[in-house]
View 1 (spheres, rainbow, N blue to C red):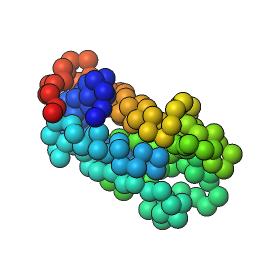
View 2 (cartoon, rainbow, N blue to C red):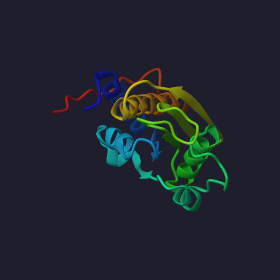
View 3 (cartoon, rainbow, N blue to C red):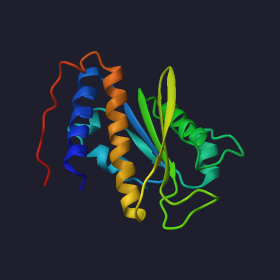
Length: 173
């Protein structure tokens, strides 16, 4: 269950996406579908959440999302390309991607908790590098929360309604 701030961020994202007719998409490696699950709980998600893809294997990332050969799967370049590929795949307006090392052990020289979030909109893309503490569940939860905030931030940048629209909040069981 997402914590209260994540729920508020999803409510805000939903309100902005519906007001502006935005299509939102996600690409997940590290979060194993957790981000799509969180976003899909948003109000009227079927109206604005285009979908998500979970791509763990490098060849899948290369084939579906156009990740170039030789790119480190735990890197800023990978995160950005996954978001760009997802934007194209889903014909979305905003896409956020997750990749990294959840742990409990390091992988390919990256310590556990190393996370890269990529984002893409039509004319720009970027990333955020994070380092989380804790076991795999804690890293995954922190990554989902941060990715939801990133989606909200991109939607607010995109939206002419951002300063004027209050989200409708709904209690979730």
